[in-house]
Structure formats: structure tokens, C-alpha cells
Amino acid sequence: MTFLVTGRSDLTIVLDHLTADCGVRIRYSRLLDRCRRLGIGVSVVADAGPESVGQKALPWLTLKIEDEIEDEQKKVDIRRRPFLPISVDGQEHGTVDARKICELHGVSANRAAMLDAWRVSREWVSPTTTRLSSFLLEQRPRQMLIATQSFLGFAFTQLEVGPTPVAFHTDYAAFYALRIAQGNEQLFCALRDAINQRIAREFGSKTSIGFVSSRDTMSALISSMPSIETFYEFPGGVDINLFKPNATVRRNARFRVLFVGRLNWEKGIKLLQQAALSLPRVEWSVIGDGPCKSMLESTMANAVFHGAISQTGVAFHMANADAFVFLGKYDTFGLSALEAMACAIPVIAVNGSGIASLVAAHRTGLTILDQPSELSQAIGLLYDSPELCRELGDNGRSLAEKMTWDNVSDNFLATIGFGSNATRTDLVAETYRGC
Image (cartoon, rainbow, N blue to C red; front, side, top):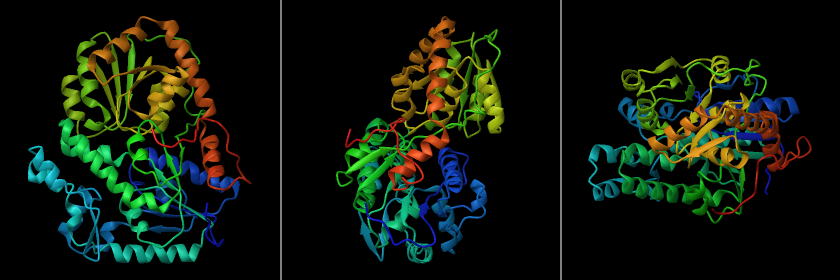
């Protein structure tokens, strides 16, 4: 592994998506806190300020793509469309021809345009790269981590730096393909493969080591990057002091099933809705907000909607639920499911999600296909088997106690060369190449 010359920072992290209450923000908030307690000097480049993760004292460079563009309409276009394809100095680099792919599958030009937006002039590339380069020269970090494949990640690929660890926390290819394909499986596969190839071309040559939240969910991306010699898992963690079992042994009068997450189609909302209609004896508890909330409220008569609430509120509802469902087939991990395990309640996870492999390997719940009948059957099994619920819940708590944020962060830091402060263990990580 090649290190940069030691300077003001031990580690510089480039990341984005800090403006959303999601796993990436929580993960790096915890990692930065652990670095502070271990005495590791960290600097950050991100799309939001340090207040987003409660770290006001760190050297920090905030770069928002819209700050580099004067045209208001272009700002709107950029906010609503993904990062593909890239053009630097008028030269296309591995452009995904989204229009051609969509035309082959009968998709409208408007939807195809969502993937085609980056054909516009990339006036942000040069100033963003210049500011990023200046910050790195000032900090002169011993090590760097690129934790985004969005615009800041692509800006980094334009710099002349040595091999740098890259973390692939989000399955960008799957999420963007889902939004365009809208149920067209052939189109989804075509777009996902094209986007993965695109990401591989840009990032595969920049590093010999990669991190993923779960190998199962990122297998397509991993197999497209033969230039990366080794991949490690960098999973999510959990606060076992906040998320803990209810001390009172009980069972709700009506079997209570909890869902936590953004209420949009990517999170398996259709599956949730269909299962609720077939299980009138179940009480559903739904935490989260999003574009599908009104639709769910009008169709799930046996559900209580709590909206977006604090982590303390989430922990309370988890500890008082009988089962937890995680339905995001393309989610690369599933922090909420791990938090539910910490509360000793069984988890039902859709196969394909990052958390499903942990659920199966450690027997902390049930894994299912993304079909309403499978979800209904799994809930019915838990409903009829209090002893099984307790066994699965106890297994989940045991796993969560190993996957604290400190343990997960220490494993990651040891992997990138900070072994004097933290030693990598066989916690959950495995080294692997390919699928």
C-alpha cells in the first residue's frame, strides 16, 4: 500500500451524502468520533459542513457541485440526476449511452434523460478538482479514503495521486437503474451493468484495495474490477447501549411488526403494502417518511405511522416490537436491521440485501424472497412460535454485541494502516476476490 508524505493529517476522507439521515452519515460520524478518541488526525472533504456529523473542530473542505455553477436551471438538473457520464475538457470518458439503452426497451426520452444529464458542460470539474488538490497539499495526509462514487469521487479520479483505498458503500448502479427502469427487469439489468462498468473504469485503476458494506450485494461491482486485488467488508455498527432489549418479557396482544426506513419504492414498500393487506391480525408499526407515505396510509388500515423520529424513539419502538422487516433488496447493508437485532427481536430480511447474509449465517431471523407470500409466511411462522422468536432474538443480540461501532471502526482503521492504535480482528470481515 502506498502512503503519502506525512503532514498535518493522518487520514483524509472524501465522502458525500452527509445531508441525509442515512447509513453513510451515521457510519462516518461514528468513525470520526473513534479517530478523535484514538488520537488519529482526520481531515474531511464532503458535500456538507462538519456540523452534519458533529465534528466542528476538524480540518474540513465543503464542496457542493451547485456552488461551482451559475446557471440556476443547470443546478436543478444536477440535483435531480446522477453523476453519469463524465466529460472533461470536451472529451467523453466511458459515457453510458443511457438514451440508446432506454430506446431499446421502449423507455421515454424524459426518463432516459435522467441518466444523460452529465453531457452538459462540466464547468464544475476544474474548480472542484483545483480546490480538492489544494486541500490535500495543505493537509498532506499519510493515508486517504475515497468513500463516494458520486461527483466528489469523480473529481478525485482526475487527480494524480498514488493508489488510494476506495469504499463502495452504496450500490449506485442498482439504485439509479431501479429509478429509470421502474419494473422493467431487462432494462434494469442493462443499465446496472453499464453503470457498474462505468464505475469500474473510473475507480478500478485508482486503488488496489476496496471496501464494501457486504460482499453479497456488491458482487456484480466486485467482479467488474479485477484490477482491485483485495476487497474487505466494512459493515455498519450499532450502539448497544441505546438499542437494547426490553427488560420486561412480554408479547404484544396483537403481533407487532416494525418497519424502519425511507418510504420509497427502493426500500420494498410494495412488498410491505401487499403483505399488510393479507395479514389483518398483525399490527404494523412504520417509522420513516418519503414519497410513498400517503399511499401507504390510505391502504394499510392496520398500521400506525410514526413519521421520521429520533434514534431514541426508534430504539423504543424496536424494543417493543415482536418482529422487524427489512425489505430493501438492493440495500448494501441495513443498519436498522442490526439495531433491531441489538434489541433482541427477530429480523425478516429479503434475500439480496446486505443484512440477509448476516441473518442467515448467525440465525438472527428469517430470509425470504421478495414476494408477498414469503413475507406473510415468515411473519406467520414467528407469530405461531414465541420460542423461536426468543431464540432468534437472543442470537441477534449476541451478534450485535460483537458489532459495536468501536469494533467495526477499529477493524477498518487497522486495515488501512493504523495498526498501532487498532488491530484488525476476525469480527465479521473476510477478505475475498470476486463473487
